[in-house]
Image (tube, rainbow, N blue to C red; front, side, top):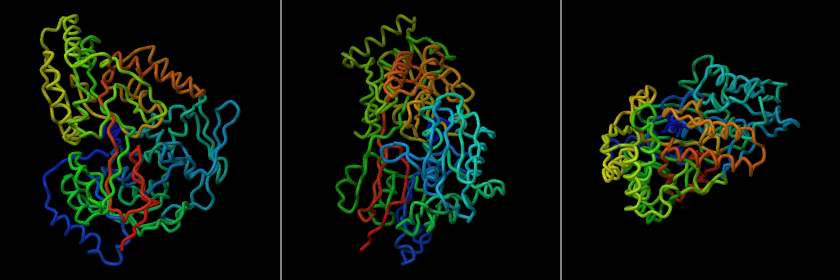
Length: 524
């Protein structure tokens, strides 16, 4: 839902917890549809989690999708070789252990014994080899994460070897950071059924899909991590946040992340609900097209950076839940680096004066900017309105171009924009935040940024094994990126979800992974 969610929001992009607002649907109609789909609250469904997400998955093949809505559902159907825990540290998943040889080039993973796919096929090392070869050979949306891999070889039924071209400190996040790297079932893929009836090894199996309405999952009693405590999960698609909130408060659903920020105070006062909010590892940004004059001039881009009031943008979009940031990585991450060039020692008047001076130095006496946003993510429209007001103060007239996401992506790919606004999600390792977006050969460098010093730092970060040295390497790269305004970073949003108090064992995560595997319902 960002570049990453979309191919950039990415991880991601079009990877992925942003809600869109559509026409208002009545809660009575919603209630009727939920009751029909869930059996009217009979004893058969009393132990089923009724969840509402803000949009419909674009497809059901996890390796091909870049939609956050897809990953919300498929997080519960598929597994990865390794996976991030609640603190985003990589832990065993389908692989119970791994060893790395002395030169750091061979990683041998041992699979758990006795794992089966939902169709009964046993999981073997050949499935792991097939899954990653498919991503690489077909150049699927996350192939760039696997650039360091020279070969993948099934050594026997339970062991698979990854050989990398150089020591790779972020290999674990690259192969298991989110469900776009899922291990798929070869028979399910080659039959073409993965598109309609996906088969994974996860805690829930796919049951059915009602286009435009819902997806139903049932518990996998043979799950390697232990059978879920609930019978299943029913995902409804509710694009109107106020409708989702009304359904939650009336008891028609148990969980949602389709929450308008302005309604958080209401939800927090409801003692029948729990509201979870954590700073997400996502970020929102503006980027300007280096090939569209005068935005190729660093002084012009810096003028825009000084002119923007990030505090106001974050407040208007997030109602106090978003955190302004001039770099990508949030302060809650161990990879955070401090940077405040565009606000240090400056009040609003001084920042505006600095912006005007840079425009004067660049010979700009008035400037029109086309700012491309997408109606798929209404927060971009809201943020763009504040940005337009900010830039009017320095003589830049903004024309906000609101496009559907498909048209937005087409224009981005064609380089037909002055500036665009979007976000990246699904980030864990610092490489996720910077390489694809800012390396001169990065796959999501739509702004056409190129700085040999940044390239060298980002290349070095991919092979540096010392944690502190690596952290400094990325901090150095990030500060140059921000100085050059390759991306003009705005804020880190929060991951906010609300659910009934009877839903126990569920955790709101900074990577926005929606995991119901350990959840239970304690209905009276």
